[in-house]
Image 1 (cartoon, rainbow, N blue to C red):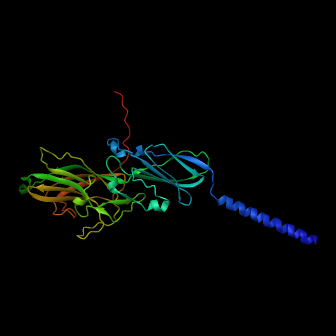
Image 2 (cartoon, one colour; image 1 turned 30 degrees about the vertical axis):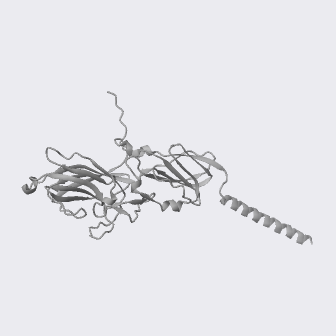
Image 3 (tube, rainbow, N blue to C red; image 1 turned 90 degrees about the horizontal axis):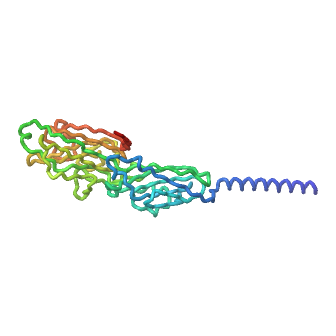
Length: 327
């Protein structure tokens, strides 16, 4: 009887130990319920081009905080850069969008990952920007977190256009630039990736229905001569284009973005397309074009290199620094 009683006590102690161990294991895995405040800073000024201040203008900020299960934990949409989020301790995923349409309906991280940004949501006074970070909050007084954002658009500049046609039958006629624009432009892009949708602007040529000042300049038949050189700096903004294989098929399919100069020699219309390299967001692509002969009959084609020569220079779209001088 005593032996049975001792065995019962041992068994009871063993069950208690197992139960206690299980309780500890469960509590370690459970998220904390302690509320903390996390301050967020968004260093937009690190993306600015000193000479074009509007490109760094911030209209508003949206900050999404997702918990360890990728569910929304806090969200703010405000014009002030003083951002504070309320959360509990644990793993966090933070996404910052600048100048984007309000998205207060986002409930989880995968939904935000699947959202597309429209090129039409951008303008020269408020470009859409995005940034992301993840962190583990372990303290009730966490250090402020900095989230770097970058513009979703790339910038394409026609910085110079020289006309050097030496054939008398053409050089004797006026050369007039009608317009400059981009073709084969993605109209939508995921906020947090380079994936484009199946919606494109100016497919294989200018489409008036896609008229967008970010990708089109009307030059009003500006005549270019030695006495009146082309001094206009055409600047365009478009979404990234990571097409791996270009196409010149007459049937639409995704292909490289091209900068097109549409011009007249006398009364004849010609196109001078410049195929751009892989376009990446927040980078500048500078084009210098020299015209030596009549161009092509359509804007989306392989142009005879005897008709024009061009160089493309790629520069990171970052701050030019600050100069302080005393004279």
